[in-house]
Image 1 (cartoon, one colour):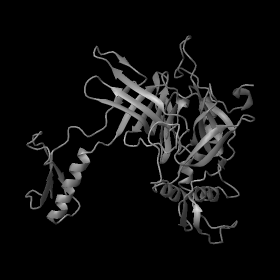
Image 2 (cartoon, helix red, strand yellow):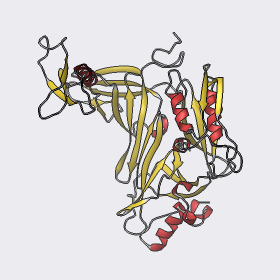
Image 3 (cartoon, rainbow, N blue to C red):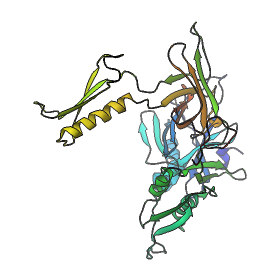
Image 4 (cartoon, rainbow, N blue to C red):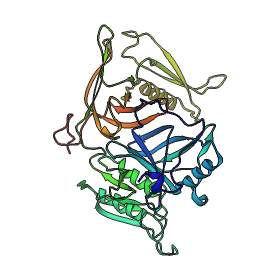
Length: 421
């Protein structure tokens, strides 16, 4: 039984000249986009997505925009509207799941964040993963009428259990909670004290724990229920770090002296740190300058480098020279630093979306045959953007942190393992 039969009136198929018509020999789209009821996770329809861009980060909600062709006739518009906003429900009453056809893996799952807008021949739908919901959930008073004061206060509790405690508090309402399961907590071996007063945003406490040295990361994801037409949402704590736990994937780009290029990287953007000033002045930005400080790279000026100057404005009310000088030193250090973030674009034909998750590690090998050569065994993927659609290549753009090359796992993975020392 197809979705057209299983979900009467729920499957949306556009009509008219705006519908993209694939060439007879073209490959079918590798993904299926489900529309789900946020309260139950039940699949209620499917969208023929024209374009999409989904951004995932380690310590932020995944966000994105998908577009679908507008129907060519009024009844199609009404059906699409009923699918996305039945009974004029709020936008987040529906959630979008991106399923990989070959593996059944759910690559993205989360609510529609606001009412979709029409942009010419397409409808634009903004989405976020379910971590956005936890970032708005509160430590709320208890009772049907919210009459009993409640704070969350613990001492000497494993930080992973603190996380799952708070996740469960967010989901303990008798009505109105999304269909999300709290995964079992990993043991981190680190006990902490935490106080979250009533009306504290639960996501703030989770993020604060994640950003603590030796902390626990957290994330949300979706799985397909194999026995039902349903997407199951999950929220999980991750220790020692978020990722699939697999060996680092290989990302390579090499160019020989004849200009021939090999490897699975389509393109890359080299990190900052080049073409920076050797002297910085911080000034009060007045027509007649009365306050300034400066910093310069004395280790290179006149020895290996010429002077290359820059200025910054002290627009924050700075009134003394020592502070102005400190600001200049800070700007010189910031501009000179190698930020370590390398952006890599990989075509899905070379590396399919389901082969990794954000947080995984990669062996990064780049050699342009001139002055850019790196071979990092376990750089962490801290961000990825999934994009594609009609007339667009299916690619993922990965941001890898070349300064984060220390694996937290004891053995079996490249890179130096983290120790307690």
